[in-house]
Image 1: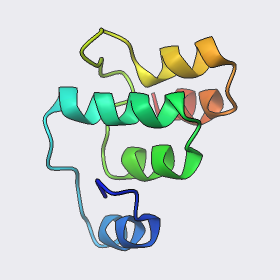
Image 2: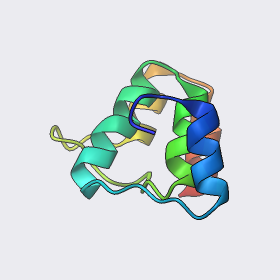
Image 3: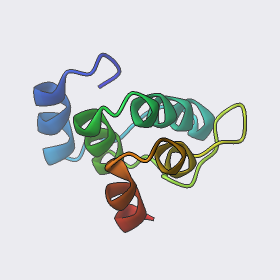
Image 4: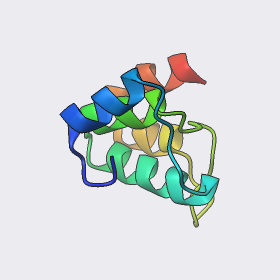
Length: 81
């Protein structure tokens, strides 16, 4: 999942796979995905248990970044929250 391999990540999540990262590391990855509008990666992280309210090293959340960028990932993140 760390390498954006959507098919592998989906298979792992389907069979109960979870992220094995600290909340801050997961938040940073989710924020990076939100910043780059990588909707598939956002979806994969959320399905694997990423907390959409977790803050990265700058205390930003993925939802904050998506809202600031006007991205279409906002509804996806908001539904999860």
